[in-house]
Image (cartoon, rainbow, N blue to C red; front, side, top):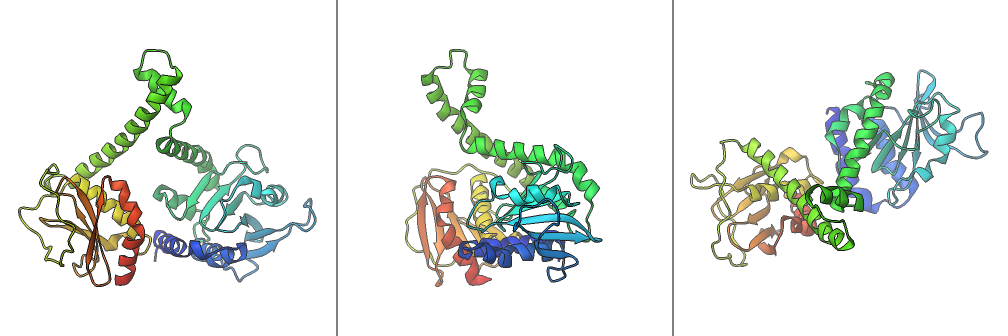
Length: 361
């Protein structure tokens, strides 16, 4: 199993168990120690590699310890401070890391709740830990561009110089991506004013602000949707015909018997069906590897399957009519159709989708 696969496996474990972990000690045992051992590759039972409850000799407030110190060639290289997975790791929780960072040879410090890992170094001032992380790894939403950087921290690939040289760019690019994502979710006043003044020549009054808050939010979401559509068009190429969704009468909500959904030469797949499939796949990936989630289109519905097996239906997308439905199936493969007005509403049925995956895996 390669590095990315190990990371994905741990991410699945975190997704499944995070709700049941309530204490810091449980977080260490369930998430942090497996990360140190299976992802970073250090032996948590070898005190020459991993020192729990680490205490430095000089300049530290009496009784304070750092949860873990990772040692290479007799020198402390990485300090790790843990908090319970039920809480969000904040810089206020890192007082020990700040103090220990200046009294050891460590150039890397990590603050984690087992789910989110924040990595720090000393870009702003030598031998003084920065207040902002240069790398943030969220195991519930892994940014694949960060995987090679995390791998550099592992025992077999440890490359401190490369880590430090890339840290500044990672720090600011990561911060910018998080800020942009936040603005797309809920635009702030500065964001709204910036775009309003680009398209509106009048005074930026309170009434205008209120009007454009709605418009900028709507435009931002449409831009993201259209960007996804463009990528899907590129991926599809000429292999799949794209047709608009028709306005035929809405299908009934009666249970639909399992049908043969093998290929049909008259079937054409819509972009909306593929977007819905992407959402179902994202939900299902909390239980199994992404490559196991597949789809097949039929005349009456678009099926999402496990292992490309029509005996393992995860969900069905009924998007051919005016009213759209998400079909979820119980243990007897009896389908219940839920009317939806937007693709985001698929997330409201995430638990049923996950339950279907668990039944088959």
